[in-house]
Length: 488
Image (cartoon, rainbow, N blue to C red; front, side, top):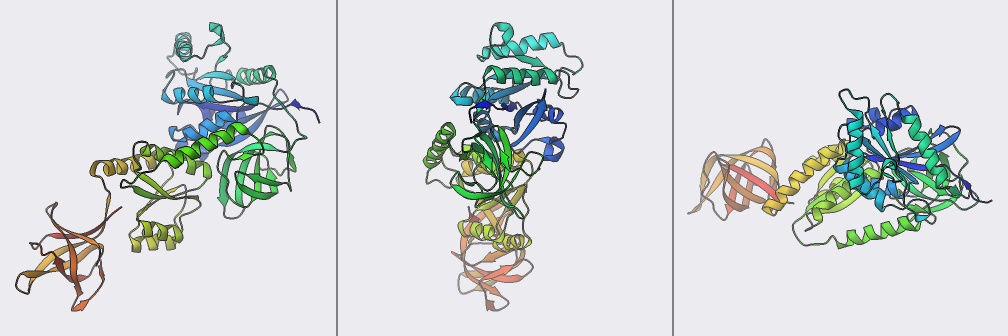
């Protein structure tokens, strides 16, 4: 079968809150924002719409800065990029970032990705539309993006994603640009495409969303994608309707893979994406160091979210390795994750996942810190605060237990036993121990002896009284606090 016209694959990029998701919502008459925590799109999705009896495939790329890597991949697999700019804000930091991705990305056959600028929110009251448009066009020209009015080749479409004004003109322009670029595919070829989302579902198993760029993917096909093999036992379109086959420019949800492939993993021959993966692997290998690190176990609901979190936290390692990814995986936080974290001294971070009851109990017993989030910038803010502390003091400490000294008893000629009442957690032999008086550390010691009533024990827990003998002896006082801690 000869090559034939295929639907354009379009990615929508731009600064957060400039209306990317609202625009796509209006186009496909559904709502993504209300399904996303905080109104921020946090996973790549792909959808098809019909305009003038012609299909257009949209890649819905996440809007938050944390998903730079996902947006970059979105631009790399797109035929046309739509840059959304709010008329009241103009070019913002993430707009510049999106421009960089568009300018660096290769479109169909490795060529430059055609760009359309959508100036959104023209319905805002109190805006001089003409003045604002002129300012934005000047900002674009300063960034080597030349609007058609300036003799360039970039259409600028004013619109309102809220009212729909100008949206039809945008769709017409997308189809016109697609026609001018002669986008073609050959359905008779073996399927070639890229993974744009992947997750592990407790009922379905491994689920991957694949954008078929060329050829045809069929139910029953044996495939290999990003090192993960499988046989397609189920295939669904963007409306979750079952499919027997999918041709060029079609996004499909695929069941039957033996594992969860990485976002951006390649099916068939897409050499420009394979090159990007090789470069990323090299960068990861170079992130080495022997400084004290914050060890983390990361669990996320989807592979795309996982990669975005790793990418964002990895930026802390640019000068020295301060974040060590002990484990990164999809799925809920389970007992095995807590055991691993306890063994290596890591914290557990969850994104849009649940914590199993037995895992929560084990974490409490093993003093493993768990933090779960459903808004990514809250996760990043918290971790950044921890990392900054780590960089300032050179190490991060976790308090394991506390006890108040309520009495003292002589022991031998020079030593004395501290009579203590446990108030928090657990204190055990072998742990690091410090004596704190009014917030000031007066000494760091080890436990020479730990007794509960008259019996020597290895540990005491909250609510119990005990006697502690310190090594070396320290001049403690009634009212001091004994803390056990560890460096992580």
